[in-house]
Image 1 (cartoon, helix red, strand yellow):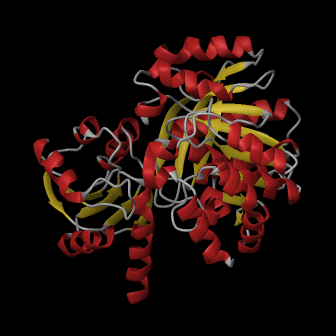
Image 2 (image 1 turned 180 degrees about the vertical axis):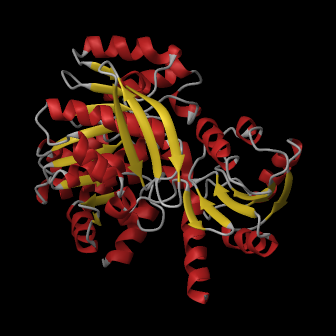
Length: 438
């Protein structure tokens, strides 16, 4: 098989959560253990940092990858889902895994795939671990796919674990209360490995404490160590000042990630950097400052309050749950615009009533859908939006919605695309087409 044939094989053969939902979720680690055993357990051949959480784990993963690269380490990065290219999930020094490696890997384990029928995610995790081991990286930043305890990535023994926050998402698999969800996320806390909690929450704090005591892991709460005291955003950078406790020292950080919600993630990264430095890694504050100024350039992260055009604004953001959308809308309200044309789409297995209730009633909603099996049909989304008294029109795909919004857009208005990772491929393709025409 060539590369395209290999991708067709793994998409068609293996259940993919992002496309089919819960049917692809394997609530055990049997398959990933079998795969990695067949590969000589590559996950034990490199150091790692493990990052879980409802929101912010992708941003934190990219930031920490940028920090480790700036510190001079050969750094692997595993994230999910991808936006346009499958290989975005697996990078070393910001560069995607080669097509040749993907082809050779799948060919080498095809018989085992036929025998145990792993999920798409299980295969990609094994692929990442094998690639990182063979490329002899020094450290890997590993983002959890879903939950933590039973996630396929949870067979590593990390230097440090991170849980960014706990909010409501994937309740059909992780639980219906914050404590239930927290128990699943706490599965990444490992024996004697420090754990950073990004946001202190009354409902979950004791769960993390109890797990850290059980595993004899030192626990740190980032928002108690670094407290935001000021933020300013300009055209290219977000500037945030923190007070570091208990030493009462001011820390000034600038980043090319413009979402103001990144303030929480940066506090998490600062805390992680401090702990890693105590463990012997070169992650001092000067290195962190340099790295955070150029996260997008270093790691190629997309879809985090990405202002892709100005005058008027066009913004792409992957926020897709209640907590994430709430933060996004708060920042949109700071823009000096008269109205928002919002292209949105969701997956059908997500409860969206509370999410939709967050949108201001003056937003012009362009309901659309990604080209995946899990996508909520745009006409169904339109009906749900109208019940929330949102002015909504249905469009068959992201491109047609963006074309319509662009045509209707006035100079003092803005376009926002949000609600699903899976709209972003078409959104960025539309942007590329727009730029090539000009």
